[in-house]
Image (cartoon, rainbow, N blue to C red; front, top):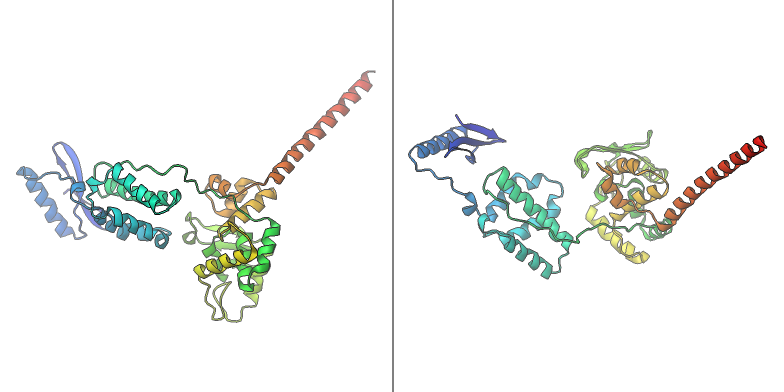
Length: 356
């Protein structure tokens, strides 16, 4: 029998007009799937079955519902990107999948631009849109062709903003005590906001001075183990040792509960304003970690390991070398060549004296 499983759902496989066809029975019940399969085989034998293009039947709303329930909720950043999916639904929801053309997609982009939305945000939505249509074609077989989806050009969100040591200490001076410690650990470990705010004592090894974060809590899904710099270690050790409420978390309120990452973000934003520091976000503390390490001479491959990046391309987006450090680098090169030239000149003199 041409039935097989994909996950929990039964699919059928049969030949129609000399071509192999695979279609979902859309049921997890094997007996029902068998009935559907036999009905299709019977219809083919009587010449009454037609391979209907579901793209003419299914709406975008149906695709969005299937995508959200079967795929989207399992992805990292679900809550953050849910609004993007809902905006796609609001625009495309009533259209049949076959009616969604490059022209219609362009209308969506122009509408979003008209609302003042940046190109980088539009591209994030289009990435979700493209993923949905890839699944509709390759996995669910609802469509035969994917409409051309052109991303917005000049939407690179690369930031070069990080703080000098002077700016960083100025910022700390305006932080409340509880926020100050969180900022210090964020800047000296390179961890993301949520990983810092919800840092658990079980993740800390004070003897080996290491932080271990499970891959489930990291963006790339891989386990991360990083040494703790002395500045961050002093803060973490102080909280762990002086904890009076026996909390699971390194940073917690008087009841032992971890701080809300959103609250941290909002208070941090107000603190920046008081400190007179512009164009800076909490996530840019990660840029500080990367840039300070690079400027201190840490190679890019080691830095990629520290930041939990799978390759150095992403690390390069975080690590920024200042013109001063570039000048120092050229100075080191000149010094190295100068020493070589001096040694070469001495050798020439020695040879000349020996042959005289």
